[in-house]
Amino acid sequence: MKPYTFALLLAGLALAGCSSKETVAYTAPSAASNPQVLLLGEVHDNKEGHKLRFEDLRQRVEAGWRPAIAMEQFDRETQAMLDEAQKGCLDASCLITVMGKKGWDWQQYYPVIQLALNNKLPLIAANLSRNDASKVVRDGVASSFDAATISAYKLKDALPSDLRRGQEKAIQEGHCNMVSDLMLPGMVNAQVARDIWMAKLIRQQQPRDVVLIAGNGHVRKDIGVPRWLNAIEPKLTVRAIGFVEPDGIQGSYDEIRKVPAQKRTDPCAKFK
Image (cartoon, rainbow, N blue to C red; front, top):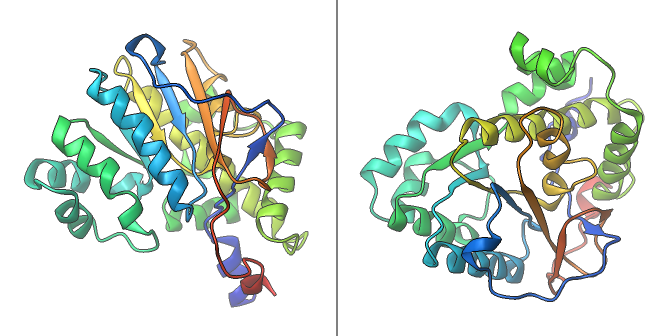
């Protein structure tokens, strides 16, 4: 496989999304409105979306909610390091430096991490690492899971056709319709494995409530983490909120928060 092809296979699937549901007017959250699992999406580089999402989470925490905060921005293998960083760091800059994770605009996540430190909320490393993504691209979704997880999520079976089609469509739209037929199945598998890992790690925090901080593509009800949360028992109360630009990718959420489009250079230029 050509180097540039493999690099694209492993590229992060930052899939911005929107929904066919009508946009819901925002109201300040109350303690009674907190579900067991709250999924808060993002367009990764949209600064206004990050601000609005943090304000939602801040109000919930200040009202007394004490969830664990799972973050796509940290790979699951780094959980022990993340736990130690939370014990030893007083501010978010320290934790970000200790973790040393490249590829994210950490200024956007500083407030969430600081909120967790101030209120002693556990941070959960929720993403699939690049090494594991490489294995999944090569060997399939089940390759990064143990036998119990494979059985629980029925990963020996083919992915449901609507799920695969939905992921293919989202990936193509997120990559300017420039992904080849050869590359697409592996990219779908990597995205699905990420979603299952997030769902699995969220369940492991129960009975503590969990907030997931992740891209809009991951919090979509039709093809993202909620789909896998609902795949096994016991059922959890789940609420998915997308923070969506006006011309985002179609999807499904419990609620949409519209955010202004971020000014950026042509996102398709890197694929041409």
